[in-house]
Image (cartoon, rainbow, N blue to C red; front, side, top):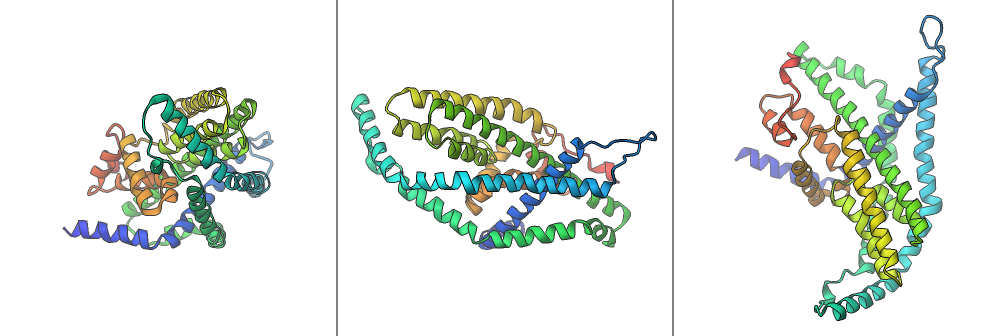
Length: 348
């Protein structure tokens, strides 16, 4: 009974404190992503080794250069959004009343051809949905300052974090276990975020090229939306296909546009989502698909789309942590794909 009360209290705390936790999550996401990109740049940067095998370039210079390139990469994406995609999103938002009218016409056409009566009250209200999304984005924009502050302090604390952990008065076994948990979370999170970002970006770029060839309006907007939605497991991939296809259906004058759009996007999601993604993230995640879906719904109920966006990273942290304590290993076992979890005794 006490555990149930604690769980309910925790859920209530997460819900009531979402204005504090959500900016912190976004800052943590950016911090991990910037570090992951910097680590990749360090791997591909030339070393110019001496005859003894030592690198001629100092490690500090490597870190500065990789950090600069990492910030430049993320800054370039933000600049692209601000200068290219944001104006198109505004134009798409302004055209929602026209799209709503076309949706009614399309629904009546389907009803006449199939003989199925369609209740017009069940048709999505596109202007209302667009207004809700816009207000949500505006609400997040007010938190950008808080995200930046969190991010700055994370980078300031980054150099001294290990020293603080070492200074915690713990026994040798507990200190080793704490270090293992933190390192595992850090390593898996960086791998996951970098891999997911790479796959999402590749999917978005390919989608932009194909949609531009097909001739679908706002191809760059749909590519950006696909890039963002691919962070959300399962549901995100479905929406990434449904939204552009639905737009093609109600805006196009022929069946060719929605048909080619559907074939292109579904093929992309199958290739990247069902073939490439599992191969690249398979070594990082050993988590059940059912657990991911339940976790997705849970965090979506508490924090909305933001919770769905961060559901998998949170689940990875829970999985790694629960696997290292005897009292919670059963949770990690249930979350795993095959019941095989990290061996807790290896740290004793």
